[in-house]
Structure formats: structure tokens, C-alpha cells
Image 1 (cartoon, rainbow, N blue to C red):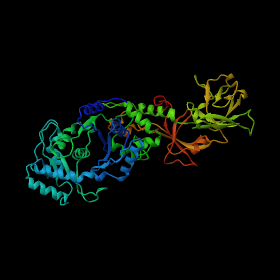
Image 2: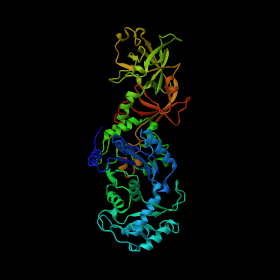
Image 3: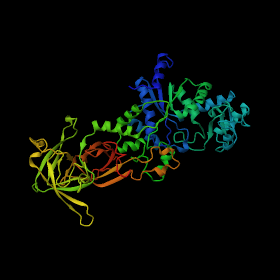
Image 4: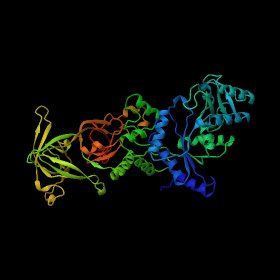
Length: 554
């Protein structure tokens, strides 16, 4: 169990009995989009702390902005958090559960002269707030009487005013060095139907206000936020201290996840979807958790990644290879092995009898003998990878070329004798070779002929056509979010579709999202959207090693 400063805070709080021996955290997503890998860090932190300290973690939807919310996002978030391996039990909540509480607390603040209805236009409110170097200016409506403020606020609730006509503000300090304390807005008018409460409300609380009250009503002990909310903490504390809430939660901040070649902005991710740069929120190139899941990332690999990068207050840019390595580490041990030929070319074993076939056995996993074996049939006509053959080999090429000997994995050593080409294009169409009969893998004397190359193959009689999608990083720049025009950094080779790939028959029974190592080609999973039994589609989740800096054309 790795330690971090938040874990240390909790341990100290428990030692001092500051939380009555309780630990209660929460994950409060807005239901206005899909969760991305940055949210995974918060999910793993909040649920992980609750688990480790035998406490509870609440899943609470911050549904205070009905204009941008949808049940599609709610369902996706619930499904995604469960997929990551976490359970909130009975503790599923919504900020809208507390609208009546928020309203009553707001009236109480008005009655005590701590809140007022402001009728300035939004532009003027923004202007009156001042700047980081100049103090704000009091609104001319700041000194309205308590009775006038109550009357106006109640009329706002009754729907007697239009959007933007009035807001409710806290009366704190317009000269505060912290902009968040310059009489922040806590209610605005929105004549929008809410997906849970319907048309019951036409005024909705702002996040900073509703969040603090929700935490207090749920008796959250440690409200953990990302670092951009650090300046909001004084407002959080003010709300808790000046309302009659039943508990006194505390807020703590940690640095958000920033990752190379990745963008976390919800707005920019939405642009990618709406402008057609990706096929949707679940496009396997997206950093959304539904996209990563479809690509082939496992819950275990993402949890390992979140543990490995740790928790701190220092902003940093995590190399995406850390995430990729976590997936390789998981799948290396847990993904069965299979054979797939991504770019096939025919190989004819000229001295092998026509019509003959023999069984070669291949382990389902080299380190899990208990997983058993499957059968591959060796025949005269085979398919191999086109990249495993060169007519004129370069230095260090140990695979097939005229005169070269290589081992066909799980089968025989062969010697390349010749090749055929297309008379028009010059492309190699058929490779010819002879096999060495006494070299079959697993038989006595099989290693009598020493070779440096070892390539995979499939029989032409049983190879099954499949679509293989090779995904790469969506951006060519390591920090696309920092660019003025991030679209200039789009990697237009981030998806290559191979429609004529070949797979071994055992893959036809694979289930959606099931992962495999395609020997020598990387880790792949069954596409959960487009794959069908008669026309399987596999997504490459990650290569066997980081090939970003060595792959031609990148």
C-alpha cells in the first residue's frame, strides 16, 4: 500500500479522533460528459482510501446545471465506476437530493444579513468584482433589506423573473485578495427542466455552495478535490461555518492528472467528437474511460497506473508510456496467446505433400501451463507476415529472404528458395520454401538446426479473415492542450484499418472486450461495438513495447 500526504492526514485525524473514527470520502462527477483517465485518478484515490480505512465512499452526481446534463452520462458514469472495480453500496446520491436543504440554508443566510439578491447584469457583476490587483466594488443592491431580499428570493423560486434578472450572492468581502470570496453567486435563475426534479425548480444552486452543503449533509470527513479548487477552499469553509449543517467536513486538494500526448479538457474532447475527428466518446483513441475500455485497457491496468503515479500537490506531466506499461504488465500475465497475421502473404512449402495436414500444439500461455494448449494445423500452403520477408535483406534482418532458414513457430525450420511477384506492381505475391522434416518443435532433435529467426504462421485451410484496427496516439505533440490550435497536432495516422488480416479459428469464440496477445504483434481485444461472430474486429490496445519513437512515419 503506497502512502501519500492525504493518507497521512487521514491517519493523523484518526489518531486524534477528529472524525470520531470515521472515514467518508466521495466522488462527485458532473453528469455532463464521459469520465476520462484523469477522473480515474480521483476515483481510485477516493474509493481506495475509503476501502483501506474501512470507511465508505459516496458516488454523488453534481447535477446543479440541468442545461448540460443527461441520463446518458449518469448511466455511463455508474457503469464506468463499477467497471473500474468500485462499489458505493447504498451511498448513491445526487446534489438535487439536497435542493430543498440548499434553499432553506440560503433563506437563513439572507435572514442573518449574509446573503442578498443582486439585480446587476452579469457583465456588471463581473466588472464590479475587480481584478487580482484591484479590489472589487460593492453592488448598489448589496444593502437591500432582509425583507426585500427574502421577498425577491422567494419570487425567484416562484418563477416570477427571467433568466439572469436576479442572482443570490453571499455577503462576504469585496476587497478580499481571494476572488472567490468577493460576494460569490450561490443561486441563479434557470428556466430549464431538470432531468430528476422536472419543473419543480427554476433556480439552481452554484457548485461551490451546493458542494459544501452536500458534503456536510452526507457527513463526509475528507472532501478530496483537484488542485484548481484550492482557492475555493476558503469559500467551502465559509459555507460550512455559516450554515446550520450537521457536520464539519474539510477539503483537501491534490494535483490533477496531466499526461503526455493526451488532452483532458471536456470542452476540447467534445470538439473532437462534434467535429468528427473521432467516431464518438468511446473511440479507442479518446482518453475517456469508455474509449480506453473499448481499446482494450483493463480495470487492473488503470488501477495500477493510478497507484504508480502517486498523489501529490505538485503539478507534473506523466509520460503516457507509464499507462501503456501498466497495461503490458497486466496483459503479459493475463492475456492468452493467439496467432494473427496482420498483413498476410502466401508461403508455399514446396516439398510438403499436397493435401497433407498435421497438428502443431501451441500453449495458451507460456507461463500458465494449466491453461492448456490449442491446435494449429500445418499444411503445404500457409500465410506469414509480409514484413517477415525481404527480397534483399538489410543488415540485422534474421527472418525470411532467399537462402535464409527460419523456424515456423511451433512447427518446422524452413529454408526460403524463391518468391513470385506481380508483373505489374513488383509486389511479392508468393514465397517458396522447403521444410526440414526432422526439425518439428517438440520432437527429438528439433533443435539440431540452429536459426536466429522465429516467425508465426497460419494454414490457408483454417485462417479466418478479420478486421484489425491499429490505434496510435491521437496527438503528435506531447502537450496538445497547451497549444493555441491543438488540432494542428492531430496524428492523422492514429488509426490504420487492416481489413484482410487473418486470425486462428480459436479467436472466433472470443467474447466482447476479451484480450489476447497476438504473438509478435501486440495486445488486442475484441471490439465491443462492431465485432460479430462472422466478421470479428480486433483493436490493438498496445504494442509489445513502446514503438512511438521508432515506428516509421511518426
